Length: 578
Ligand code: FES
Ligand code: MG
Image (cartoon, rainbow, N blue to C red; front, side, top):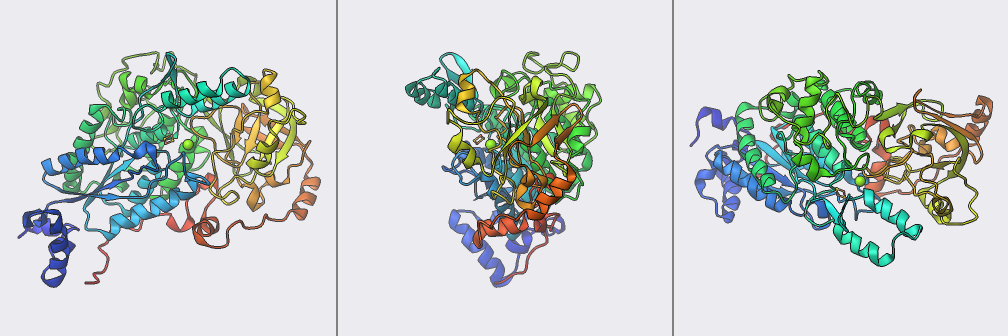
C-alpha cells in the first residue's frame, strides 16, 4: 500500500496499521465520505482552528480553514480540521490570560494524540496566537500559522477609529461630556465593522507580526485584512506549504532559534508593538529552550527606531499598514540597517532575507524609513529595575507622556483594580496629578491571570480639570491598544511578597525611564519592618483550574507559563489502546 518513505510517516502508525487496529482507525474516518485512497501514506495535516462565536475576532476562521484545506488537497495531503478552545479577549472573565496556558496545553495534547504529520494553526485574538505557538513548539511537528487578519479600519463620522484605543478615548469623552450615550452606542458599531481581530497595533496584530517575524507564518500574512480575498489566498498557500514542510521535515525547533527571537524583539520595537509580546515571546522561547531574559527586550531594541505609525502610538490602522507594504516592508528596512538576522530559516524553507527581497514601502507616512523614523531609536519599550521591581518591570515609552518619564510623586495605593474603580469618580478623591497610582495584586498569581488592568482611567475630577496622563504602576498588564505612562509587569508581583506589596500611601515613588529605574524612596530598615509584618493574601481558589494555575504559574519576567510546561515533549506516537 505504501512505499518505504511514506510508511515512516507518523500518521501511518494509525492509518497504515494492520488488523483490527487499522480497521478501527480507518473505518470511522470513512463515515466522512473519504475513500480508502486517502490513507495511502500521504501527509495528514491537522488544521487547528480556534473559531468560536464567543471569540468574535476568530469566528471567520472556519472560512480560513476551508482555504487551507484546498491547499492541502492540492499538494497531495489529507487535511483534517479540528477545534481548539478560543480565548476571546472581550468576553472571558476574569481574564483571557488565565486561559492562555490551558489553551496551549490543549493544542499540544491534541496534536500529539492524533494521527498528524503536520499542523496549520489558525488564530486571531490576542492569546490564541501565543497559545498555539507554545503548544505546537512543545510537540515540534512541522507547523505553520495563519492568523485570521485584522478587521477593516473602524470609521466613525468620517474619522478612523481603532479598536481598543478608541474605547478608552470614547470613555473619556463620555466622562467629560464631549460625547452622549447615544453617540457612544452608534460608535460601537462603527468600530467593529467586519470579521477580524483588533485593527490597531494591539496585541493581536502584534502577535500576528511576531508569528511572521519569527518565521512561523508566511511573509505578508500578518496584515491582510480578515475579509480581504488575499487572506484566503495566503491560507491556501499555507495549506500547500505545510505538505511540503512535512516532506522536508522542517520543524519549529529549526525555525524558533535564539536569532529568530532576536528578530521578533526588534520587529516588535519597529512596529511599536504591544508590551504583551514580551510575556508571550518569553513563554514561547521557554518551550524551545531559548533563554530569553527581560533585559534582552531593552538591550536589543536600543538601536531600533519605531518605523510604523499605527495606533495606539500613532495615527494609522492595520488596513493602512497592509496597503503600505505590511511586515515584509518593515523587515526589509530593518535588514537594510543590519538590524535583523537575515539568514534565519522560515516556514517558506527560505530565509528572512530571501522572503523580504524586493519588499517595498508603498506609503512612507505609514511605514517610515530608518533615516526618517516615526519615532527615534531608544523610545520603545524600556525595562526598569530598582527596589520596587527587583526582577524587572516594563514601560511602553511611545504610549507614555514624555514629561512623565522622569517623575517623583507620592503613592496612592489600591489593593485591587476594583478598589480604585470604586473611588475613581469621587470628586473628593485625595489624588492630584503628581500622585503615583499604585494598583497591586493584579499579577499572575495574585489576580490570578495577570489581567490588562494597569492603565486604569484617570480620576474623573482630574480628567475634567484637563489632566491627560498620570503615572500608574502595577503588577498586571496593559492592553496592547492602551496608552498612558503606565509601569507594567512589576516582578515579583505583590501577591508573592514583591516589594510592591510594601508600598504605603504617601511613600515617594521615583520613576526614571532614561536611567531605567523605578524606586521606592523608603529606607531599607523600614522596608524590612514592613516585610516582617507582611502576610500573603488568602488564596482565592482552593480547587479547579484556577487553583492549578495559581500553583504553577511563573512570574511575568519568566513569561507566566506553567513551570511544568516548559520545554518540548516531542511527537512520539503514543501507545495504542485498541
Ligand atoms: Fe480580539 Fe482585540 S479583542 S483581538
Ligand atoms: Mg488585549
